[in-house]
Image (tube, rainbow, N blue to C red; front, side, top):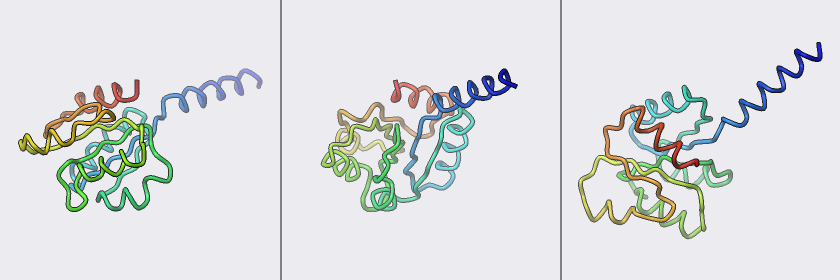
Length: 136
């Protein structure tokens, strides 16, 4: 009986150690669902927001361990979200994802808390490696 309880406790501790909280902010349903599936399969606890305003309204009360943020969204766009997070002295690492080739927009997204800027389409391995890097 004690052996079963110890084993159960070890499993819970191990699970809690690897369950980092990731928030995805992307207005594209397909991209958001794909990222969520990939991250959940890797044992991350994932929350998602279909708009940057929804994230700013509800996602800041309990910041995750990492944010995956789309750059090109309706107002506020990803750069404006980064501006607001910076104003709040947010230290949460951010992985920016985008399909843009606009150098000015990409340069505007470069911040200390931005770990990487990934160009869409993004494969599962690239997403997982980048999120792991952000969490390290």
